[in-house]
Length: 264
Image 1: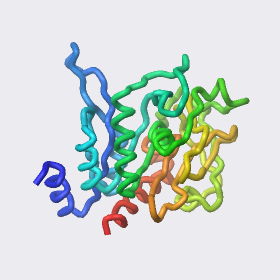
Image 2 (image 1 turned 90 degrees about the horizontal axis):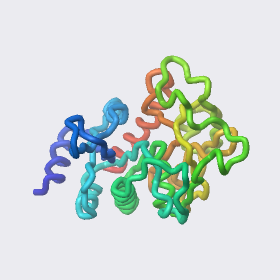
Image 3 (image 1 turned 180 degrees about the vertical axis):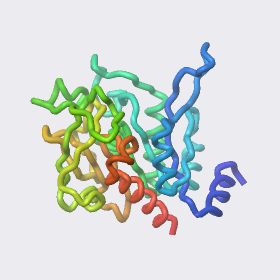
Image 4 (image 1 turned 30 degrees about the horizontal axis):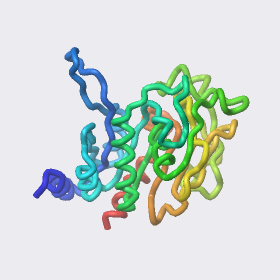
């Protein structure tokens, strides 16, 4: 019995879906050349609150590891983070591109491909939505301010930190009628927090747009066949606003619900 199979067996006893969350690498608190692989606690808390069991995937996982993980886990969450290396979608480096990690790109792209092959649920947040689109053959705007006329402010100085009110520079989104997002939220318009300077440009085959900002920027993507492949990506940070904007809880609840359904 392999380690991953053992983990899966133990979690099956609890009847909670195992949700893989990809990590990022940062300097260790101990200093020097030491590093650590980490995940922001808000993602872990959001998965736990929806009755999923999070399992962090560290850097260094091989293709064999990923294949095995995809076989035993129930769902995949790709969180926010730095920019994707532009060569993955046919572009060259730009002065606004930052925090690129070759290792993270490789890890998350392998994960998305493995879960697509297994047709298991995938949820992408901010960078995660972009990774999904790029893996499936889509393209990206390198920088919103340089490529989109009269954009709204997608790079909130307040970032994803909100209390009972959104920062003044948050923005609204228009939700497409008939989309999964419209069904989950029960709304045609919503306000979101925002912390990104890039956006989806060319939509990948197999995806549809579920929401846009007022300037036309894609804010949500989803599978064209959610029954066959539950896949959804949002450009905002729902994990940070669950308490005060509870419609966002539905994203995690529906994600976990889909993993339970796929188990059957």
